[in-house]
Image (tube, rainbow, N blue to C red; front, top):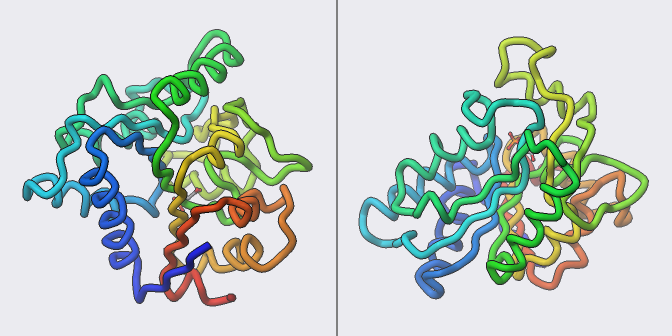
Length: 241
Ligand code: PGA
């Protein structure tokens, strides 16, 4: 496990984008695991700039996102489908047919979960998975629990996640209560994981994930058993280490 410290969130984004760009330059048909939330936005801005400047070519890249809300139309401004288009896909030369976000509105949620895991396997598996971390230590929407769940599955969001994500919605009652998320097994199968955390409100989750026993109440702690994980932190998120 490597831990790199930076002064601020912008530098974390530039470092993560540099690692992702290197991956795509080395392997133009890379499979990238992508994340939503505030944390990866500086990374995506830097990737957009690298693409516009002709440094990185996404035309052969495939992407799989970690998660999506259930029962929210994909066209809703807060859906992760919309987020990815707005923050990244609309600004780079990735083929939209090669971008994948799980369907949170599938009639058969179990079938959709299995389909999504199979699609990742058929694409050859994820080369690099980018992750943020929740204030409760979640990765993807794998919330604190008594166990780690292996595959893609439906999750009941915890109150702390609902409150954290409320800032994107008009009212707390509008925040979906369920989501579909890659499981911990699917995340751990990625060949390399980049975990990003910025800001003081992530410091306790980072401390628990990196310093306390590996346990499913802090789902990110399992990453310490991955053979190739790079953790990029700003000073504020590293403040309790
Ligand atoms: P954030 O979310 O980047 O918006 O803080 C991260 C997460 O919940 O995984």
